[in-house]
Length: 517
Image (tube, rainbow, N blue to C red; front, side):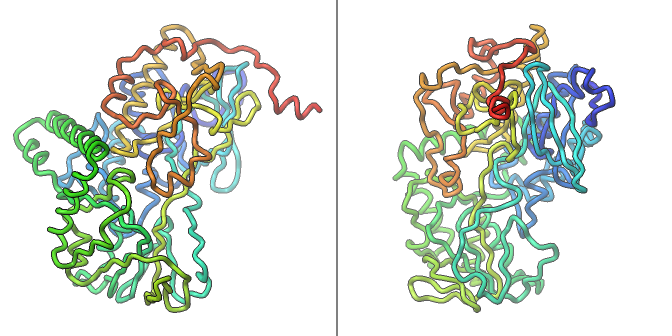
């Protein structure tokens, strides 16, 4: 068991080295995963987690829209150390929360989590070789805590503000407008005409979930309004292979085999889409035609881009298409002219009547949880720093963050990043070092490359705030999990780039110089 963590600073905090060795920000998948890896790999290190929300779970606690579910199979979205035990491999939000809650309870992590603590600042001191983190509770009161290492599991999008598409005339609409990120509690849409704007995973989940299912609680009709079609991948919600293995093999072994199988299939599918896009288009279109029958419309289901230029949209058990065939849902491909009092006027001249409009128009990305980070008084502008080993940043000490894969499950990256950071921490212990910094003396020596070569709107809108990527390792955020896993687990820690040292007086910061003038 790792050492006891004391989150709140004691009266003698300035005299003590740190309040905990590692402070984890965020109690979702990334943060909980790091906590368990610390317990397993760094049992001598103290740690604590801070979570801004009233509950753990991150994304899976925030999003409450109908049908909320994983868009990856749970044998790869689940942790490497904790088998997924449910029959369905495409899991709903409550099941994922149950999984996370069971982990924190069985492993004694819950008492290390401080809920309702929003991090509003993080300051690194080279002289003390530690982070001082400022938090704000629900009453607005602030407190600080210190740590040798700061680990951000704060996700990749803005929890406070979704992407706003600025539809003209929305103030004229007399019905309700709802964004999935802020779904109203006990929202009643029974018998209502609903228009869902968007064509991504959220929209495709909401549409069949809101349709009438015979219980009198569903909408009378749900229309998905899309500007651009999406590539869909139909697969069963249950993994028959996984469930068979669980019957004949020990649980952990069955999980390990299924995880390996799914990782390989994800990798093969992505590579084939990049190498032979026309073949993949034919395959996906054939599956769509079989699922929709005479409801298939090439205008609505032929995207103008190749598969995996954007993330494939998963449709478990073809539920979205079943709702269409039942006449309870439909797809309209058009552009919005404006909202009016009764619905949406389209540029084609068509009008969509609506009582409720759901704006599933995407997320707004955020770097480092929007936390102001300073190193020796100087604010960190992430767009001026290069990724190092997919989790650290050039010239920023004792700091790591998780940004999951675009072409695979988020947790695959979270697991290998946590394992790697534990390796770094153990190397620091063995070499008696207090500081680990990826040193980049001359950023101009690197050739920049945009590895976010996905055309998804939420990616393109955020490129200007994202950290930089080079055309070679280790200065890039790779999208190749299979190779990353090898590199992160077996690559040298002391590689000549990651520099190890001790506390030392910092040079006078730019901020201090400006204040003195």
